[in-house]
Image (tube, rainbow over all chains, first blue to last red; front, side, top):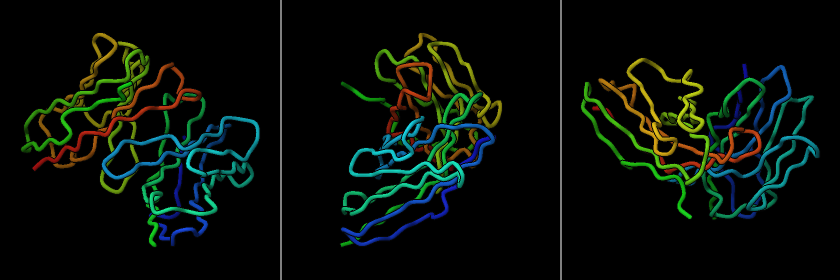
Amino acid sequence: AQSVTQLDSQVPVFEEAPVELRCNYSSSVSVYLFWYVQYPNQGLQLLLKYLSGSTLVKGINGFEAEFNKSQTSFHLRKPSVHISDTAEYFCAVIGPGYSTLTFGKGTMLLVSP
Amino acid sequence: GAGVSQSPRYKVAKRGQDVALRCDPISGHVSLFWYQQALGQGPEFLTYFQNEAQLDKSGLPSDRFFAERPEGSVSTLKIQRTQQEDSAVYLCASSDTGSSYNSPLHFGNGTRLTVT
């Protein structure tokens, strides 16, 4: 079975500080990994994805994530956050034999001035 | 171009009522997915269509839930005899191929269902 664990339900940070949102996955086979962002009262938008190749993936809005197979992690990072980054972030996984993504419970990023 | 459109945006139903939630995917998108997002949780898969064929309905929580996409475009999620535990945001997503690997999912803004 595929599953995703997002270790933090909420991450408060100050504007211009760096941030890391943690994601660990569980799967016995190779998987593809995604990060989605959900702004208030909106649908989810794709931030970035890892399918293969370089383990460091760059996405939109200055976010990046690193795939670490040995630690089964796919943590999301941004070196300097803005107020507008306040949103819920979801890590997701898909593996062979599955129709679609399995999402984590989400991490609420709260950026304050 | 228009994104994925869902209606109604909000729905309040009394326990026991039937509801129908509509999803208009992006024109030409082959795949359509329904997810249920309970408060404080991530989206959970309900069902998946490729064109008009329902290829996976393993996530539907009970036989009170039914989804259709008769002409391969608009989809309706129907919930019969609603219960309080059905209260959630129902998200629809579409993609332009049959693969969730390479084609990003485009999500609608969801329908928030409250069962009283």
